[in-house]
Amino acid sequence: MIRVTPNLTIPPNEVRFETSTSSGPGGQHVNRSQTRVTLLFDVGASQVLSEQQKRRVLERLSSRVDRVGRVRVRCGRHRSQAANREETMQRFAALLREALRRRESRVATRPSRTERKRRLEQKRRRAGVKRQRRRPAGEDD
Image (tube, rainbow, N blue to C red; front, side, top):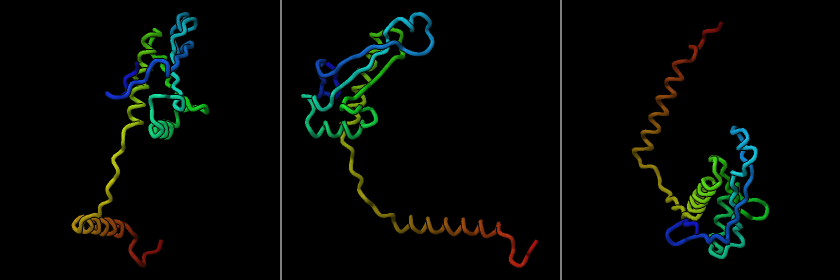
């Protein structure tokens, strides 16, 4: 079970793991051992997520979703397949947790009178500095 939130866990039958050879240095070990792990999670086929949650995940994780609608998380950092599998599950849980988190809606506010005054004063000061840098009128080179 992959625990995403206290009340949401993804059962093992909803995720699939694929292994492949890692890249980078490591000599014979990296060439022969299938230590990189890819976790695949089919969002549309999930029985744990509600329709609203599925839409939210597909929308917010669109860069990680393939054409079929599967979220793909990959890790090849460690030398052992078990460590990479563990890290992919942790990354997946963190991604899903962030995607499912409710965003607080922004409350539109207006700047205060003092703030508007301060902004205009800064603009006047800046315009004055730029005016001082100009070549005086009537001087031609």
